[in-house]
Length: 231
Length: 240
Image 1 (cartoon, chains in turn cyan, orange):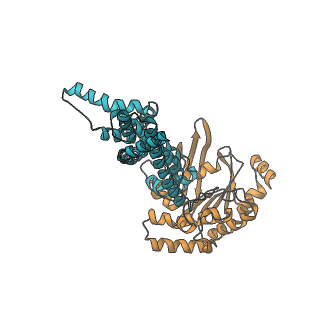
Image 2: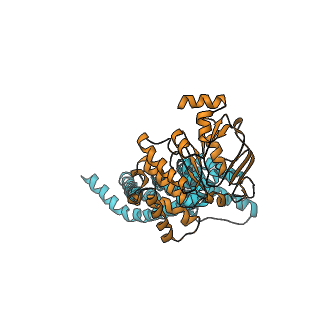
Image 3: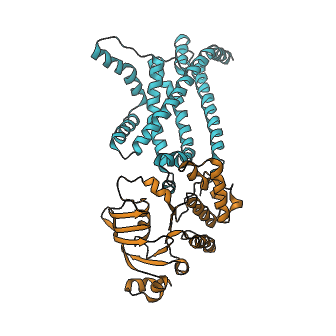
């Protein structure tokens, strides 16, 4: 009984700090989703492009990011790159951990988004592009009016999974002391050694957040799904 | 109207068109028949550059389509195309399918584009389906919308790529009737088809293609009753 009481007490004590952490987690994730989408869309079109100036860098970006762990990317970006800049210029150089965190998460998520967007565009029937072009539409018009509206419906569900993964993966930013949800939990544990009640609370807050995202995505999917029962 | 000179098209090492030379006059209805794999569809698709010819020249309305400097979008505005698999835009209503190109490509005001689309849907007998999405239309209805969509650009030529081949037999008639009306109005049409009845009744001329060349051409009467070439005869004997 006293164990449960002490666990509850810890959970209550850590809660304000976890909420503050959750705000950082949401902040980092939101920015990373935003920039990751932009990066991902650019890289997707780059990979689809026939011109190698666009295709090769996009492919290399996607392959490198997907072929290396996020954890290592975080270390490389936060410690490695400033170190390199100091080595070259000799001046002290530091990146704000939150900015670094947003940047790494955006770059990482962008690579995965690129594949999702590319696959979505690719899976729209070829005849759609032909029909649009045969009516005199430019490639851009055909993309905007015909291909993308259909691709978006295919892209949204896997993109949603990607956002959820991103939110969870942002916990790795604890390693560069971004005071997000997990880091705040770790700090509390290092003071109190109350690992179980703290980490179960941390887990539950993540769970609440991911459930929140899924709900929002389900809503969007339903809204977009109305007119599309294609073929 | 349309002039094709020594048109060749290869896909890799596969030669699909081996020198097509042909002229189509204004208001003419030319039906292209032949076995599958003979290059009929490729020939048609070269005319609006959905396929890039390997060599040879095409002129439409005096404009050289095969000139690398030509604005192909401008030419496609004048050349309507109807596909075997309709290729309607599934995320737009029938009406919007017809109205979209005039709005986006010709910059027609929305009201005018929708009025025009309404008229065209009426013309193909689908005015009551204006606000329906393609998925709720039958194949025949979808193809009629597709014809209306192509006509909305007021093209000077219409290309039909096996427009009835993907249809259930009972729907073939409704599509052919729309095409007949179009022919009567004087539309220049090139129709790749397996509908010999249509070719005979509506076609001014018939081209028989086999193995990448035009083997024989003539009036429907000449082709269907007095074919001289052995390949034409054997093809016709199999399908008639």
